[in-house]
Image (cartoon, rainbow, N blue to C red; front, top):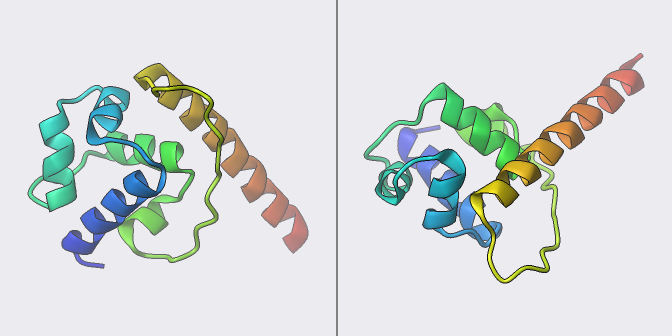
Length: 111
């Protein structure tokens, strides 16, 4: 997948989760302009940022990088007027646990 497509996938994931660039920036601890640059393809993301985004969106690095189209979203219902960076950190932690459980279940089925 081309870099441009990677950044389009990132933007789509953010919009599908109904997050603003500002909310995502607070979660990552960066300036909102960096999110704009990531989504425009004018800035590369760090490995740490890639891991944080995969946890937030409940996807694999292979999916985000375009090496795989396998993606089963982990959806949450929110009952808050606004989502804070701390909320997104909690969601990412739960998603990471859910993805690990999903992975372990797949491995058990293979045996």
